[in-house]
Image (cartoon, rainbow, N blue to C red; front, side, top):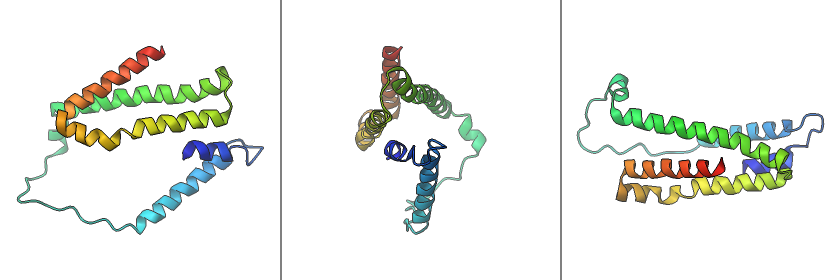
Length: 147
């Protein structure tokens, strides 16, 4: 949705390109927040006896926490490099028009989020560490092919 908002609103205020885009996204965010205020979510169901909550220090010391934090940090770093450079390169180096860049980003977002529809089942079958490792491996293969 965001790439199409950017494409359709980027020149609405000719003296300030993308100002209308930022304002539109701001109002969409406010609207989403207002809608969430009226959302009635059921409280979580508790099952049996629960343990005492662990302290933040205990959680941070766990090996799984450190591993997952590193995987997340590295993934976000790679995503930041790619998602900042790619649209700029598409428009400035490969001379694609902004509409084509918006379509490419939309396809990218679909490719990024569509697998989440089956990831839960894959994690149940193969385990969190195996699926996380596979994702990290795929990201590295893709990044190596881009360089």
